[in-house]
Length: 271
Ligand code: ATP
Ligand code: MN
Image (cartoon, rainbow, N blue to C red; front, side):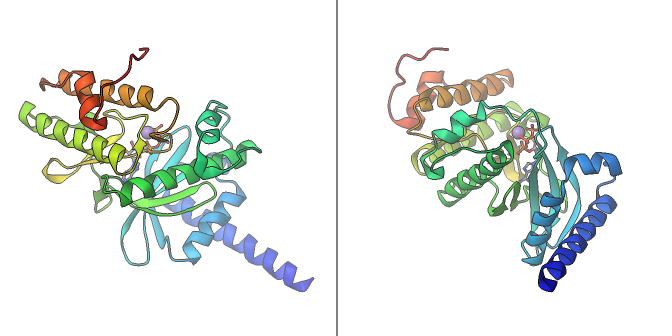
């Protein structure tokens, strides 16, 4: 009995500690907004990650979306991290996501509350990152996932994230160079990681030094055996071609691009 109380007290203290640390670091959230975003369970999850040394400290918010908030952090070794916290009280989390989850053989049977689905969604992004990272696709290094909190490598330096492709202003030649790298990344992702990003565009590609590229936001990536795989791949290709064509790059035909990635011509695809 006493032990239970002790544990409960420790948990309460942990929650208070993490909450105070966040309120101090993330000035964009006032107390009320904070309570909306971080429920006690999420704070406890963060506490667990800190206790394990996966996260040592937080240094402020990188991105605040409807579905997630991303924080800059460091681990005990001093490596820079991006911590993606999926919002559990997110009413926008559409059932449409179920389609992706149910068809993923890596996850087993899928069901349960919205909260559980969001945990699975985070786990899926982690698995996708791992599979891509290990195959040599330029994506953030996955460090850990617990429930709705995903810890990955930071794409940037000294707390400054690299720009998204859409935020860059480069010459045609530089864009042509990046285009080839994006094509290579998609091909490696397809052939070696057996994944298709599924939401690739200038919003989910970051550009590092010497025109290097990184793919981010792999939550909706699908295995190449997914029934709609060709459709998703073709959509990614169209997005990429559209962006680089708008920058004056001589892009491949969509079908040619598809063939370079997969080694085969696309079947007739509905647009
Ligand atoms: P959005 O709806 O804005 O796309 P999201 O929930 O899909 O948000 P992401 O796309 O994964 O989340 O990330 C949002 C933003 O956070 C990115 O546009 C990028 O600026 C930044 N970001 C994401 N991952 C990293 C990372 N590993 N390193 C640095 N910055 C990152
Ligand atoms: Mn995104």
